[in-house]
Amino acid sequence: MKTLVLTLSFLIVYSCSVTAQSMQSSKKEPNREQSESVLVPLRNNTRITPDGMFSPGEWDGALAVPMSENCILCLLADSENLYLGLKSSKPAATMLSEVYFANDEKQYCNLHSSDRLGEGASPFRESPTFKVGVTKEWSANVNSFNLARLEEWQAAGKPLDTKRYGDIYGKNDGREYRISRKKFSGVHLKLKVGFIYLKEGEKESVEYPGNSSFNSANDWIDLILPSAVEAAIGGDVSIWYLGHCGFAVRTSKYLLIFDYQELRDGQQPKSRPSKPSLANGWIHPEEIKDLSVRVFASHSHDDHYDPVILEWKKTVPDIQYFFGWKAADDTSFHYLVGPRAEYNSGGLEIATINSHHSGVPEVAWLVKVDGLVIYHNGDCQPDDPVAEYEFLKTKAEPIDIAFVPPVHEERWKYSAQNLLLFREFSPRLVFPMHAKAGDTIYVDFEKAWKSKIPDLPISLPRKMGERFDYEQGKIRK
Ligand SMILES: [Zn+2]
Ligand SMILES: [Zn+2]
Figure 1 (cartoon, rainbow, N blue to C red):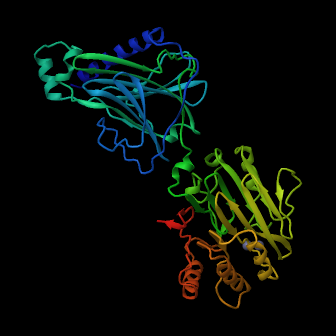
Figure 2 (tube, helix red, strand yellow; figure 1 turned 90 degrees about the horizontal axis):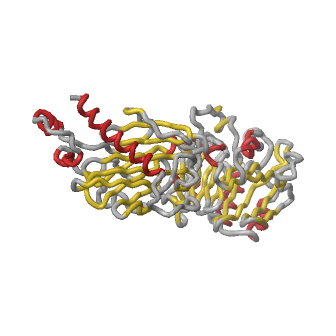
Figure 3 (spheres, rainbow, N blue to C red; figure 1 turned 135 degrees about the vertical axis):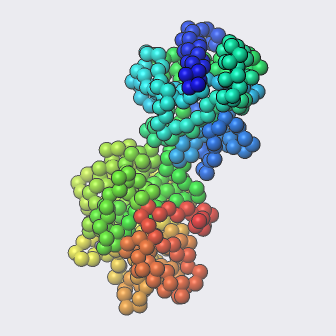
């Protein structure tokens, strides 16, 4: 029985490869001068099941590109996957689809679906190939058929006439592909589609873009995916805990990274995960390379500054560094060495206050960006916090997000400083830092401050990489 099914597949596959080749030389459509850029929409919590049924609501928010009179290409993405739908105007019985994509100029990939799935990679200028049964990090529906009916058909000695397939094959709305974004790097992707389907006994072939070849991807569709970090964000602003005093803040234009180091979280050594990412509290430059990254280091102590941050500029084209001391001789860095240094450029307004502790100069940052006010204290402990906060108040009040020492007991100077900050700036969101994720120090901090200021909104980092979405002045959980 298996042989028969395979025979059917190969019949269809064969007919497709012939069609694909003949289409290369067809002149049915006008020549395309340049490839189009298509922005793939983002929808979080996408629940597209690659079953060939375009259920109501399933593709809401997708981009629909007409490929022919009767067929549309649907595109949608989330942080994990690219979804691609080939929908025919009427349910079709047998279908054959080829999704070709290229991430570089050397070769292209082919995701095939007919009775079976298959995958292959070929250099440009060569015809597509694939191996049946190979599906690495993607899925799509295949033709559904009635095996009993097929056996009957075969036993009756009837020919494998493609026009009669409708009698054996179940009908679907089209093809649905779910392709993991791990299959390609970055946000740019070239795409070409081949789709053949039988509807009411008639065969329709679609090649999109028409007249495109396998010589290069120049005349393929140029897809732009939402960046993976962008896609991971639900609210207006997202905050990730990167251990100890390290936080990443994603605003509408920037990714800000404060006091990042890979040494420890509180007193606990950090251990590098197999796949470092924001989601587990690590910066992997590849992940953030499409973003406008602004890096802040408050002072030179190794629990606040790690030279590894300087490596990121090799991978991230739009990156700038802000230091609270003269950290290097590189003139491309910004040294906000006080007292009360300021910076204002590119929609980023920064003001610092200063102190010395354990022999090194240091700052606390007030950063105004994209309608937000962010305060990161580092280890800063000014002699006269009243005067320093008066100065910061001339720059902004209130504060949206405050990262502060995890201190509440009155005997500590930091406690008075925290109290002053909370009173003067009414922060909309407070994170304690300088301990480890889930530490009782953090828990005690929350309890103690809640008893003093009941409506103080405190968020506690409970694990490395924990993400907090901040929307219209509130944490969205
Ligand atoms: Zn320090
Ligand atoms: Zn410290």
